[in-house]
Length: 233
Image: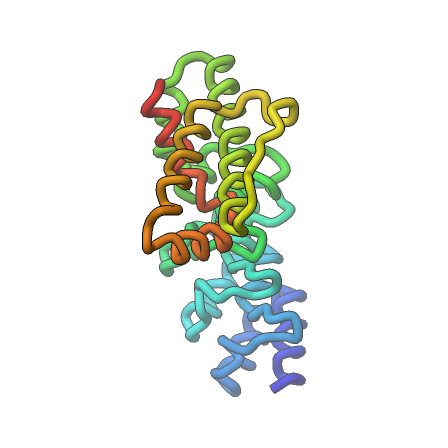
């Protein structure tokens, strides 16, 4: 299988659709095979932004939501280190095949967060495909550009401070927020969170909630923090 995988990988690197099809017909299991780093051939086709090869692999049984190196999905590879116009055709094919943009890699990034980090230039249309349309509408409702920037900063700072508080609580430590590092964090929202955590300490469910807090990532808090701040706007 290893040599056939290498041959298939070479076909992808050379954008050789007929060669890849021939290999897949001879060895159908290649569609789900993994290389030494855990990536599938679909990951590599997405990384190279080869829409036709992506379609070939999906049609032969490739797992559209397979997690590969560092837990990254094919959808995340499709938006890695490129312009939006390169990524969009591949993203559209993957989404049509059932790709889940909510899946997170080992760093806690879902496809939207990964695209915002990896694309050479921001692209609202592509971000909307990955699930940002509702967020865009809410941001526009806030007001002008300055208000939007302030809200984004408040959300980011509050999210980081809340994550620190929850992480500390999950490990039985006292959480502290450095106001000088996160000046836009919402103090009232964080105080409410601290009070909620304190109330849990008297509950029989405390061990469960502490275990959950230890497994949180910053991305887990994003939607909740935004909802909290929107409720106060």
